[in-house]
Image 1 (cartoon, one colour):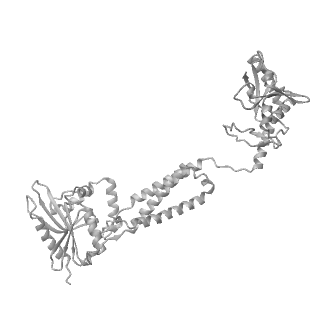
Image 2: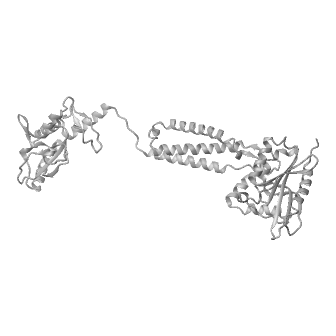
Length: 465
């Protein structure tokens, strides 16, 4: 089998293209050239140009490939690009999960297990990176064909891929199928030069297809001598970011024309995504560490703290040594549970509670006497009550009455609904009722003077009945 050289391919394809465009309406002869070089490592093996009837220049270029340079048309898997894409997707996935966990308040324990959380984060990133790698690796995005990528570096009206008959093993060759797919996708033409130098047309350029015109930016060349200047002008006319990326891609290492990967895609976008995700997760961590930590105390420590507090409130006598604190200290309280605070073994039955709530608790030297609320149905002009506090248990109310009586403060208790229908609690009050607010205020002043030596401070209020 005779091998076709690259020069023979150029010669035959130029002849073929002259005939192909011969019948196209034009205002000038077709200008032909070969072996053009441009900045950034751009190569055009063949170049044709003519002026159309409307005066516009129509430019055609082609890439010629023989058996010895067949790698120019065979795809290479860009593993580095897959790795960066997988890493970017993994960071993005973990960052979104991290933000979701922050919104749902699933990170409350993170400040207590910081290094464990960091380790878990790294495991998640690695795991998602592994998953994304296997999901992405089969995508056409990572199949790099040098000739196709080079065509996308500059702009012409029609671009052709020309190759020798022995570059591919046949039409079922996966390299041929991928080349054909990418040519269809980009709107490039394909021709094959046979052993007898006969040119076989596989597909024509799809420049007239609006879909491809949107995908490809078509810019006019003028003459073969302007090729290099035109490429330079198009590159310098891009925005600063595109110029910067092109400059990085054209570092001295990539200027070697034998390096088929010199047009490999940069990964700066992936780096930006990773940095943005790291910033987002750092911000979430900062917000989590600003939260107040959860404190865990044992029950005995809590009881000691409450006992100390009550001693400071009621004096040295421990009034609650056998009281169990079993109610929330955050409002609103649960109104349908009685009592909130109770003594072990002293829980009232519903009937006992009903009888107790119907009575006024009055202190006497012989003990407590209960009276019904009806005893206070007529209070005359005594309309002001000095309220010392409220209690949700009658036993605790009696203890408080006894304590205040020992300090010389005359107090008694009453079930709140006797005067206030919505007050489902016991009221500790000065035993006298007062005809004016001023007299009630004077009584409060006198009471505070008696309580001050014992270190007791209460929010004493005046209630109008």
